[in-house]
Length: 289
Ligand SMILES: C[S@@+](CC[C@H](N)C(=O)[O-])C[C@H]1O[C@@H](n2cnc3c(N)ncnc32)[C@H](O)[C@@H]1O
Image 1 (cartoon, rainbow, N blue to C red):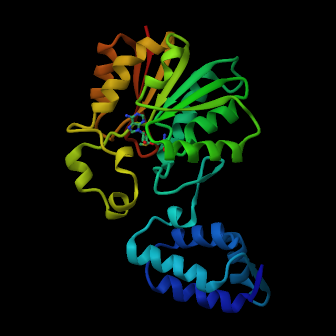
Image 2 (cartoon, helix red, strand yellow):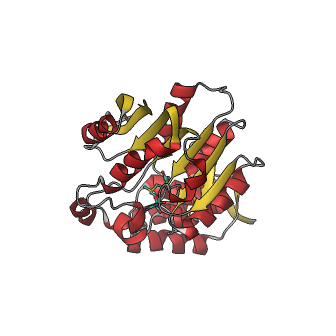
Image 3 (tube, protein in one colour):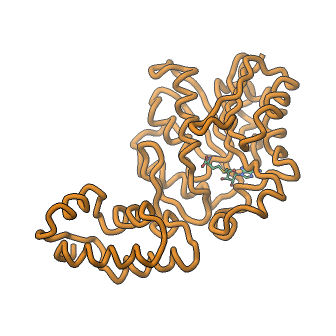
């Protein structure tokens, strides 16, 4: 730990923020890398006479901040972690940074199954950092889960995140294309979830450069209309779900109605589009027969 006067620290902080960037990203950097929370800083803003203890020196923090400003590198990748629901997850450029809107998937599960549900079997397709599956495995210790991703590097991060977040053993990871690694679980799933790549090809080209330059393309692009992966996941889902098993999908802001029609065409019932907190039809759910 390095000790520094609060006055010197506050002056340094002001200088860094004058270079640009948003205060929230800077607060994230201080919290994750230096161990200084926003509430610590608020206290020192009231009384700047004390001392602060930093896990990293100011030069190191400044170099990360400048990298973020110069190259638009997401601060989560530079710090190597992100926060998602109540999880602290390792992230590298091999995995998508899990988005706050995706957190609602867990609330949708709570709404369907209640909080203290009996033993169930769930699958997640395209787990990335593992966020969704790990949150479910922790919330439902009686459930068993399986999670897949096509990218072995992403899976290794998900596995580390699971080990770091839990002492449980109710989640297993598989590498492969969507349902392929789950051949032996046909007809056994009560619930399947996916936040697949759904950005249409031409929309991808218009994404902000910090996304295009750093986040994995394979996690984002969903073909010409963005629905290539969603279609495949829905079409094969009936082979893997039990009767009355649920499928929960995240989709792009304007795809809800189309995803709903694909679900209906594939014999799903109770099909519903669910809004995210900005009122966008971000999730589409259905129950197989
Ligand atoms: C939008 S990201 C979602 C990651 C994570 N579930 C989340 O919500 O943050 C999509 C994930 O699907 C994976 N993926 C892409 N194509 C795949 C395929 N054909 N089979 C399995 N996983 C795939 C990507 O590697 C990526 O991790």
